[in-house]
Length: 114
Image (tube, rainbow, N blue to C red; front, side):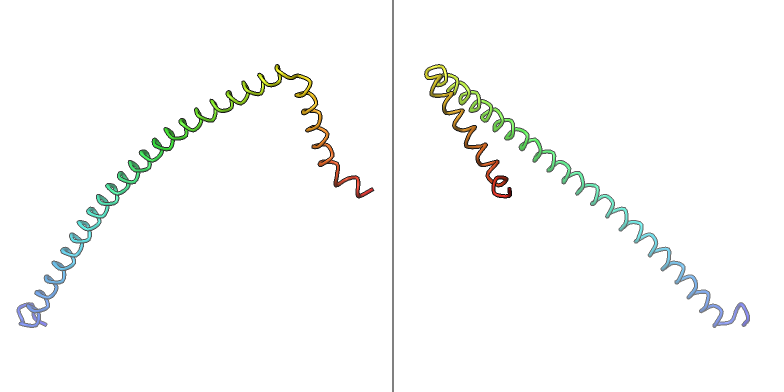
């Protein structure tokens, strides 16, 4: 085919149009990839912020519960100590009874196997 023939000119036009289309597609893909990267980065920052706020709330609530539980344990210890001082013999017998009961429960499965 001669370089100046109509078919050659059409082929050149088609080649140029194809190259332009490929370049346009590459630019569009790069722009879409950059936009997706920006959106993913923003979404990751929002998720991170939300998680951090949730953890802060959880920490604050757990501190409150821990303080409350600690105070209740101290109150229970104080109450038990006062009752033991008021009636030491009763407390000793109650402790002995609980110990014997736990011992019977723990050894109950072993005595039947002999």
